[in-house]
Length: 95
Image 1 (cartoon, rainbow, N blue to C red):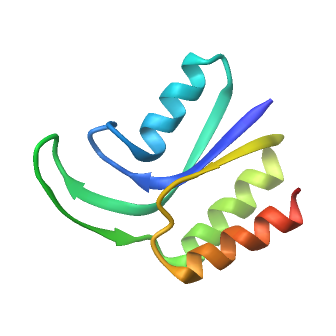
Image 2 (tube, rainbow, N blue to C red):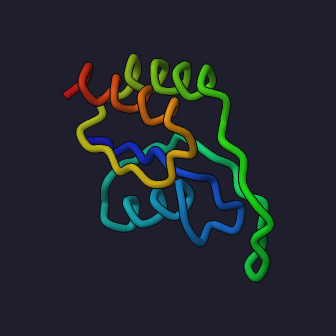
């Protein structure tokens, strides 16, 4: 079984994809993660964020779904409506 986190990338690991993967692994669930946004922050200062390019997100999802047996998905920060549409497409295609 593999769970996929689709969420923002917090470089401190306090939230987003890094934290999701850590928690899932602690629960004994193999996991992978795809970033939707990149945050500019440290543990005490948040300066902003930028969404990943939609083409990057789509290509990442295609590669993961073509190779790994995804059985569950956890979605966090999406970033843009276009990224939401891409995620929705993959949810319908691989449900």
